[in-house]
Length: 147
Image (cartoon, rainbow, N blue to C red):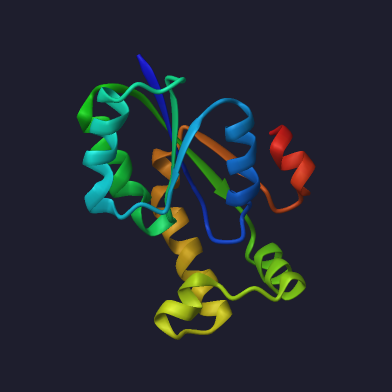
């Protein structure tokens, strides 16, 4: 059976670093796809010839629950939800160091702290459904890739 990992976590938790680790493990990656396109992506995974049977969907925490349900209901994949978690303090520090804008801050015109709070609330909502959780609060990029 083909393996499908759904990777999610709050913005700033290490999703980009984790993406590289999955690529190095031979996973075919799809990142940021809208929820309404997931079924067609799964069909593509099932019907097209890929050099791998390992797939990874990277989705925002606000969509992870719905994407996980769609994938598990499909029944064609061994599905796992991998969830990165991170403390609010670590996220605030990372955004201060990188000077990046939080996606939710930009899209919804809220403060950085409010955007992080929304992400952490969504993370807490899907936490019980996670098959794998990694707290990246105290991990550097090399340590996270190893995890």
